[in-house]
Image 1 (cartoon, helix red, strand yellow):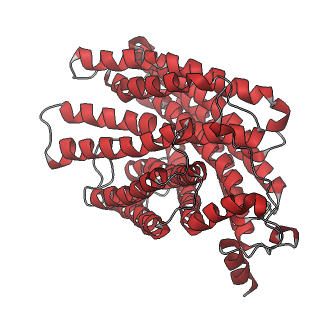
Image 2 (image 1 turned 30 degrees about the horizontal axis):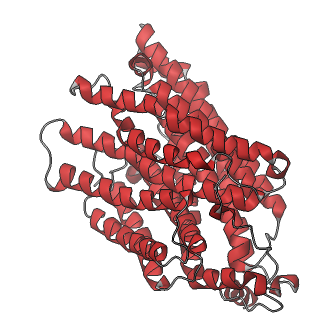
Image 3 (image 1 turned 120 degrees about the horizontal axis):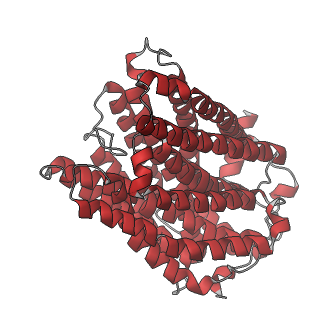
Amino acid sequence: MNLICNLFSSIFPSLEGDGSQREREQKIDSSMRFAVLGLIKGSVFWLLVASLLGLIVSVKLISPTYLSEYAWLTYGKAYPAFWNALVYGWLFNAGLACVAWIIARLGGRPIGNSGVLIIATAAWNLAVFIGLFGIFRGDQTPYRMLEFPTYAAPFLFAAFIGIGIWILLAFKARAYRSSFASQWYALAGVFCFVWIFTVAQVMIFSLPAQGVFQSVVAAWFGGNLIGLVVAPFAFATIYYLIPKALGQHIIGYRQSGIAFWSWIFFSSAAGLASLVNGPFPAWVASVGVVASFGLFLPLSVFTMQFLTSLFASFSKIWDTVSVRYVFYGVVAFIVATVLTIIGSLREVQELTQFSQFADGVRYLFLVGFAGMAFTGMVYYILPRLLNKELPNSSLADLQFWMQGLGIFLIAVGMLSGGYAHGSLLNGSTADTIDILKATDSYLFLTALGFVIAAFGNFAYAVSFIWILLSPRTEKEKSAGLIEPAPELEYTHS
């Protein structure tokens, strides 16, 4: 009974004391508390599911007979299920929670219609469940990140439309007419998913294009899902969190427009580089390669803005849980983007195209960059949303080091193993079995990384449940527990 009472006190806090400093923030938080918590709960659940599937997939690469008695857990099903649970389950829920919070807070006024967001969130997670169920039944499609069976697509699309409408209405109802970089990226991610998902579903499944053009659309969708949806949500998080947590401006903020439009322009075609050496017109892959190198422009601006701003308050990075995750995410973004650019070269793809190298870059970008940025934002949101301090900061520290080490080992294992695998395939007369045995150590390193990361993810789940169910202290009953963060988004430097 006490746990139930603690849960209700977290969702519907009764605050005492002088809350004049946070009156506006409290009203905004209360208007969307249940909806944002629902998104965070969904993200934590799917993160645990993805962790389990990642472990299974990594072990199967070492021991193919592992769980072979279960037909629904073959590698061909567990592998796409892992990536879809990771992206559509964890990253979308976490990213949308961050975006909803940012749009409401920057809007400066309480948001109504939270019921729409709650219903749409439940529908989204139901659609993800239906999609994964279809994959395990063997109904998946052959296109990467579009493996959900066609009967799950309408549910997924309708649910996202509901979430997108709430975000657009929240932006329209803002008290401040000007807009900021965080809002640009948040809205861009929402619009781009509706656009690319519609095009992919129509041109691949509803009114299929002829010949190899379906594969071109699939490659375009896969690249844009990462570059135009997940990445903008992460950029919105970083642009918001650095000024709030560090109490300083984004250095070079005036160049944000250059970074925004150049990222949108070049990233929209960079995914086509994966078609190099395939049965496609040469110009299609060449456009992807050129677009990939164009990413150097926004990467330079992001690197200057983020790293300079973080290093300006370097001592605060390790003292602030949320900023620590953002710092890791920024470094992972820089490394993953550089590897994406280098990996688009035809000479490099001749070695890595049929190996795990691309998966390593994708994992580093999605989990190391976006995942860590979203996690840092969640740690910033929860105390303010619930008016509670983290019950155990050591658990958050443990999670950071476990997740950080796990991501590093997984990325190194996939990247180095993929390069070694490709080199052996291209320059050796050894048979496939011998080549695979030569890469066992890299596969083991990847599996070890998944084990360590899983412990970190479990610590994250425990930390989240703990803050929800912990009793409220006398200090936490005061509305002034969290000092109002400076509104630095409203001034440019």
